[in-house]
Image (cartoon, rainbow, N blue to C red; front, side, top):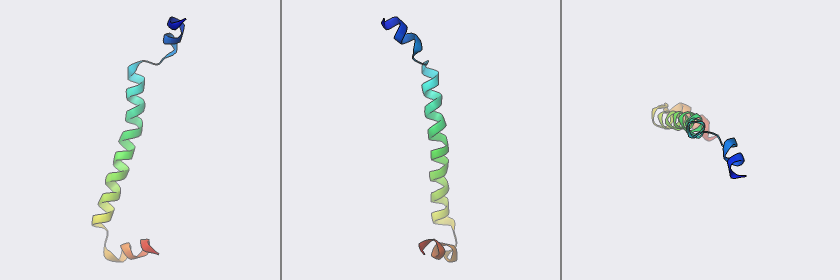
Length: 50
């Protein structure tokens, strides 16, 4: 019974790639937010508050 169940569990590479598919875009998004926070000019920051 367990052998049949274990056959359907994906390989470790599938889990690793699924994690990377999430973490890489999320990291780029967060870095982009930080760059905008520190790099945007003051007139652009005022429009975001409204």
